Image (spheres, rainbow, N blue to C red):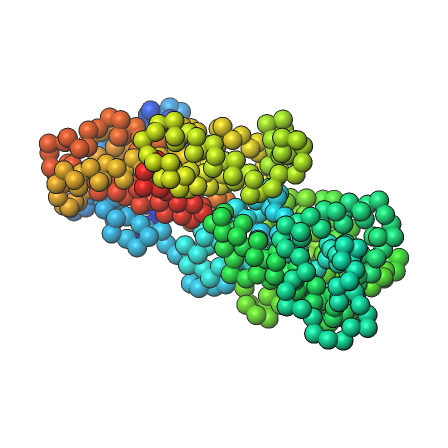
Length: 600
Ligand code: ARG
């Protein structure tokens, strides 16, 4: 469906050109004075300079043309876009606009009938890779990984909704020093294991030599040791080197680490309602690296610098000096950038994506600038390939410092989720209208909404404060408030049905009051919001929209008695309108990555 703003702008353009002015002056925006009008055009002010006239004279001419247009539209049996008295020129030259109530109703009926309520698919099955999650194997998920998972999942769902083939890859950190650390710590704990017997030639056991809770203990111990004990660190480095060069016993341990850890990671991501199409990781890039290094050398892109191999990426237009990208350390080891480049080769070979989106902490910005530039310089992706890095800010505690547990440790994601669910549960139980079991289930759904909405409602790049009490509040700009609005509509609809309300008949009628009209115009923004939010990879725009829509619905609901309305055509129109609100809200939250309960 055409966007309402475009339809209004088209009217304005024909009026401007009809009066002999360029159409570029006909830009229409949402009104910043909703008490006076719904939309406005400020183009007469700019046109005044170009045409050496008074702005108000131009505005008056355009208004006269618009009024004439409306008259002839009505005469031809069409619905005029603007209301009678809905176009006004005011000093110094603003054009204030109000939409014809019938036109607003027509737009609602159009939305109701259109696929996806009027959102047009921008994609036609093109593949887009979304690299998010980024968990590190054998290290527990912490809140730092939360943002990547939450933002990435939402962006992926947005793209899917718009018709792209979105491939989400968790891109595990599964090949680094942590593996060597675990191997050596395991040797210290269980030296008798066959993996450490160099003369062993048999098959390696199928059973992992540790459980998940042991593994969770092994890594932090090893990491602590490596900071104090240089000899231990050296052993870990050697073990990592051997693993990366295919030493079978260590590969066998690695596989155990992977299977034990992955099961746990999957459970954690499932709890977040975050799902990946691909569970690949840094280790999968390994096979591409020898070719990659050779190719960068052959193309004359890689040069030696203090024993290491680097690729210059600076460009004359850079505002600050960018260091070269290191692709091989002096000891021959590959680095983070090397594995990201190898992964690009693999993704190009297997998926031929039209776009790449990476979601990590914004401190990785330089890394991605380097990787993207090398990939383009070397021709691994075409020069105009959109490669987007969404760098997010830190989730802080109320003290403004990175979020920690009460005793100052790193907060584990599952504990954070448990805390939220508990707080929501207590809130629900305050009212005591549902069973404990039901309250537990509802708390899970509402808690997830509180967590995700609390994150997504901020522009990704900004730091934000994790404020549990505010996030779980049923009032204000929160996830629970949105869910509460949906649940409220569901309950009106079911009460309507229980009271024998007929299935909605007839069309949505022109609004009877201002609140109803405001609700319609809010609904009418839907397609534009969904399309821009994805184009700008900005889930916070959807959050902002559903907050506005929920507010518009709640004030409409406050002013109208839907269930006791005597005029049946009016009642049916309202039922259809609020159904549309519910459907739009539900689609939006689904895209954001959470759902609504039946009751709350
Ligand atoms: N494992 C990394 C980390 O914890 C994030 C990986 C992000 N993705 C990528 N392709 N580099 O920081």
